[in-house]
Image 1 (cartoon, rainbow, N blue to C red):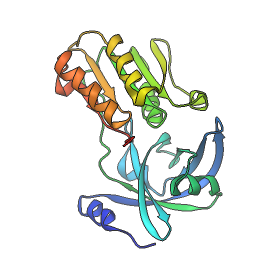
Image 2 (image 1 turned 120 degrees about the horizontal axis):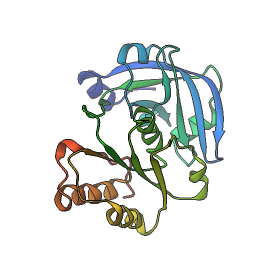
Image 3 (image 1 turned 135 degrees about the vertical axis):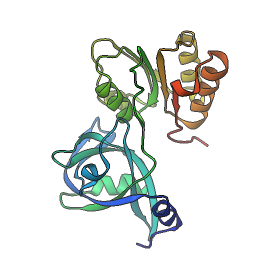
Length: 237
């Protein structure tokens, strides 16, 4: 498979590429496939942080295609982590569905650098969906003792079968996807309290919803730039 211009740009920007090896597979809720992987030295070289993600390189009819995935349960000592794939039409889902123990794939680390604020916030407000739920879970793991309010958008009931890592003090709100994401935006806007200096806000859902919520947080609630992390995980357009 010939690597495209994206790979060359990422390498020029300091991207580091590793070869992952499948060590096990399992179905999650019937709509997702979880692959357990040996990391090829990735975690030892790059370290681990909440919401950490990698770019995987797939063969799409002879052309190189990359997609980003959040690490699930990274174990630096063992050199292993898992990834979850939504089972819909596409080269990534096809690869994950057919993957067997011993199969390999290249992963590039570039651009993943989130850190929890120091000092720790007194409350976390997290907005995500099925695509960003592994990142939400990594934040709940890292902030086990910090109160958190979480909204997770779901497109169908199978997505509600995905596991969450909430603990005491963590409130999970499942929100059905309606009106092209408008229902999530309206639900979160109605529930968010006035901006507080000791809170942190993390928004990672569909790109238009992320923009709308970011605008509300910054312009209406007065949330400081340093208190907000926002990323459009995918685009409906």
